[in-house]
Length: 404
Image 1 (cartoon, rainbow, N blue to C red):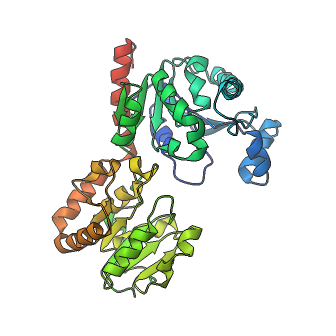
Image 2 (image 1 turned 45 degrees about the horizontal axis):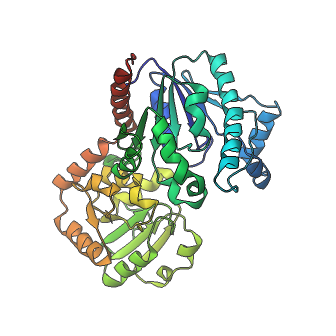
Image 3 (image 1 turned 60 degrees about the horizontal axis):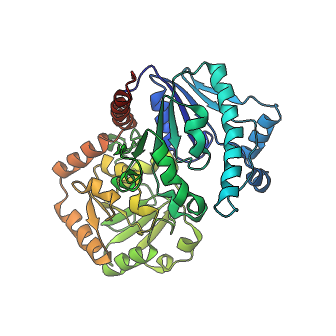
């Protein structure tokens, strides 16, 4: 385990983000034994205008004006920092020398702010942890000169237009500049491993305290109770960016005696889909976090009907660990990233295979398999994730001839 170090985080997810964040969880875990500075990305001019009424932008503008502190203490070892300089929005430019020049200018403004606070906190010989910041982070190694630079990739972001426009060129170049690349799937580590031989798959962390069998209520939630069994369930955001409506439709048609229960908010495509007209498909809407385990706990089989695209092919779905932590038989779309779970999850290629695997999951479920699933999930805590990272850091630091 990394201990007694100074660690600086940069990334694309701010500390005040409203959704789950790998970077935040890792920072919190590392702060148990290290001093940590979590640096938020600077406000850019386009966001400052378009989202000017949002609480996040209002907060950053007040910090820029000096009306609020730029440094917040989260715990005794962890601070989060909000830069007081605004950067220019340049993603609209074609990739080339002008874009690179302006990106370097943005990076200089940003890292001068970072160096200022590092000096105030007396951070020295620090480890730089870059969470997917492929543009500003491109210049971090030369502008901050860390004792070790780590690039963390958890999503294939270059499959999205915004990141892909410049990132398809810059992310591989960035990976080659850093001391080590760490990924949460083999697909992603192999992608950047072509540019940096020190590229490692370190798994994924999950907060599973809320997903324990003992926490599941004996009675099913009221809106789940009247639904006929077997219940084939999905819990999470219902979005066509990651899920296949066509697959769910085919499944519901092929197994009319099964109830397909979808728990979570929907995007427009799901709201307008024919799924709402199918008698054996049930939408239960969003739920509070404290009752999520009650829903999963009363599924007969849990599913993750992903569509296969540039984003999902290398994605590690944390919901799989939530399903497994409750001992649920789970059927998921087969992707390179999901091969990590091949010993505990039924992996399916298409709708027909899905239906067969759901049948099999229902037929062979037992306590022994449930225990195996729970143990699998318990190996994916944030503590284990950070420990895996620590082993890689120790290896790289020894190769560099520096003490860890």
